[in-house]
Length: 283
Ligand SMILES: Nc1ncnc2c1ncn2[C@@H]1O[C@H](COP(=O)(O)OP(=O)(O)OP(=O)(O)O)[C@@H](O)[C@H]1O
Image (tube, rainbow, N blue to C red; front, top):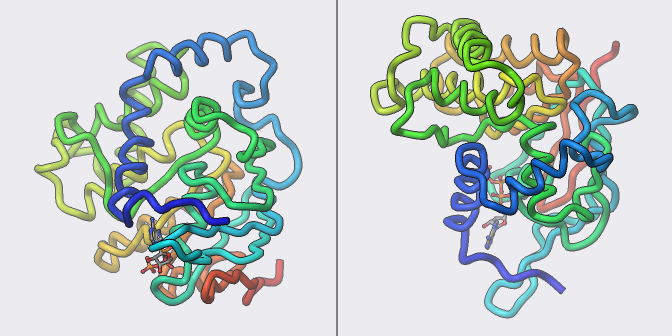
């Protein structure tokens, strides 16, 4: 049985927006679970970096939607393991299921069957609040469209993400870290600009700074260089690889850019919902 689609890809955008909003506005339920998390041995509330083993362990995942009363099999028996510090690229034709897979890894959609464990959390067993906490503490996500909060400056967009992930930091510490993250992506002179006053490439880099600011265990990136010129694209790639090498973040990125895929430790190809490892670099 497939689940019903939430009326097309517009719904996906909404869900992504919700994921961004959950970083700025917590519902009473989420505030309660955050408060509970302070005292709860639940693994979701554990500080990042304590799980051992692979960051991603996906086994036998199927993802099926009901479209016009017929099942649409988007992902078929997908399995994948990714270790800390690994950079994995997913390539494949348009419509093959790459973004859908990223949505499952982020807990923004639920698999129809199979098991997805990310940073020690079995996503299928988490409630919506649990998934929201999981995203805040374990994940950085870079979307193709940047999903920055338009009314906030670049500095505030990045600070907000860190403030939510690390609420014990002082405001000063949070802002200093956000300034450094923006400087690291070459935006030290744009920190007070709002998204509307930034170019596409600059907004993408703010998104990257925001995704990386809390040193996530896993960075998911959907076409991170898709909208960038070559120079900016190379910079973004270098930053992501640095994060993997220096902080042991696992990086999973979707790309149509052969240069970017060639730099990954492993490349998986998605074809009609089936995922196969096609390249592995010798270590
Ligand atoms: N909510 C939905 N309702 C109906 N069909 C959907 C939904 N979400 C995804 N699909 C379909 O599932 C298939 C896989 O989509 P997905 O966006 O994952 O592909 P993709 O490989 O990321 O493509 P691209 O490279 O063009 O971004 C497509 O045929 C898409 O139309």
